Length: 539
Image (cartoon, rainbow, N blue to C red; front, side, top):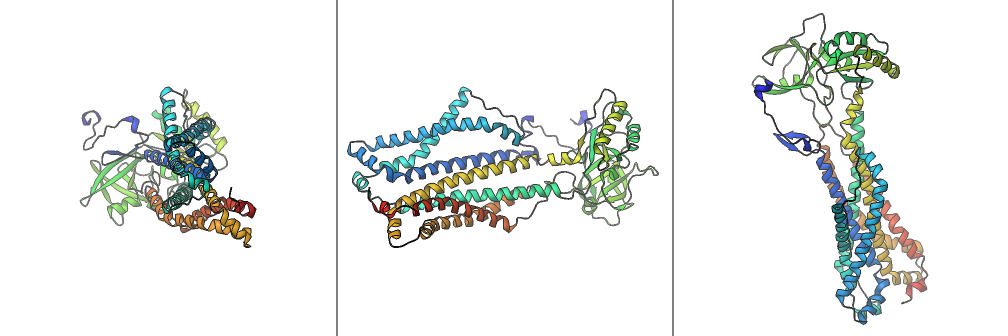
C-alpha cells in the first residue's frame, strides 16, 4: 500500500463495506457500533412491549375469571381433566394471537408508508414461505406464553369452591400483579423521559453556535473545466450581484474535513486536521479571528498557516503569531489564530486544526449568498456555471442542510421513540385497566356494603384508585434513576450535550400518574355506580 500511495507510517484497515452503515466508526482499529445500537435498542423495546402485552392478556383473562367460574366447575364435575382445560384455554390464547397476527399484518401494510417516511427507507412487506412460517411461529409462541398463566390458573380451581364462588387471591399473586404495574409504568416513564431528552438534544444541536456562519452558504464540487481553471470562475462568481463571497477548499467544513497529520512539539505528539484553502475561505465561512490575519495575495503565504485556538491550547504556546511549527517535512509560520468552531458534528470535540494555502488543488467551492436574494442568485449562478462548464449541471448543497443530515439517525430515533413510548403507554394502560377491572370484580361485595353504609361514589373511586397510585409512584421512584443512567450514557456519545434537567423527570412522572388515574378512574367510577343490591347478590 505504501508503494502504491506513497503514504508511510500509516496503518490501513480493511473492513466489509456492508458493515459501513451500521458500524461506521473505528476505535483502535476495530469497527464499533453506531447505528447498530439503535437497531438493538428498538428490537429490545419491541420485545419488552410484546412481553407487557402477554402479561396484560393474563391480567385481562384472570380479571374475568369470576365470570367463568360456573363454566369451569360444571366442566370439572362433568369429567373434564385439568389437561383438557389447559389445552382449551391455551387454544383460545393461540387463536387470539393468530387473529392478532392477521390484524398486525393489515396494520403493517397500512402504516408501512408512514414508517418508511420516518426512517427514510424503502421497506417492502413480503410474503414468502419462510417469512410466513416465522410470523406464524411468533404468533403461536406469543399465544402460548400469554395463555400459560391463565390456563394454569383457571384449570386449578376446585369445583366445590368455584360453585360456591369462594376464591381468594394468594400473596404471591398479588405481588406478581403489583410488580407488573410497576414494571409497565416504569418502562413508560423511561420512554417519556427519553422522548423529552432526545428532543431537547436535537434542538440543542440545531441551534447551537458552531463558530462559523452556516446560513445562506452553499458548496458544490469542482469538476470539468472549472476544475482546471477555478480562479477565473471564482472571480466571475465573486462579482455577481447577490454573492457576498466565494472561495475553494480541499475537503469540506462538514463531514470530510481534509487530511490528518501528527506533529511533534516539545516531545508531545499532537494530532492535527488540516484544510487546504484558497484566499478568502475563512472570510467566506464567517470564522472570526482571535489574533493575526488571514491569507492575503499581498504576501507570500505558501509556507504559512492559520490555526484554531484548540491547536494553540494543545501546543501550549503563548504569543503564537510568527512562531514556527513543524509541518510535514519542514516548518511553517503561524500568521493567524481563529476562534474555535465545530468541524464535524457535536458528537466530537473540537480538535486542533490548521488552514494552509493551497491555490492549485481543490475539491469544493463555497459561495456565501446574500440574505433575501438566494433564489435569484442561484438561478444566475446556474447560468454562469453552465457557460463556464458546458455539459455539467450545478449540483449544490446548503451547508446547514448537510450539517443537519449528520443527525439523521438521532432525528429518526426521536420520531420512532415517540411511537414506541406511546405504544408502551397504551399497552401499560391496558394492563392497568385489566388490573382495575380485576380489583373491582374481587371487591364488588365490599363496594356494595360500603355504599349501604353511606359511602359516596367519590369515596369508592378514591378507595379503588389509591392502591394503584401507590404502585405508579413506586414505578416513578424506580424508573427515574434508571432513565437518568440510560440517557446520561446516550448523551455521553456527544462531546457537547445538554444537562439533564430535573423537571423532565417530574413531568414524566406527572404524565404517568395522570394517565394511570384516568385509566383506573374509569373503572372505579363504573364500579361506584353499581346498584348495591347487585353488588351483594350472590349469583
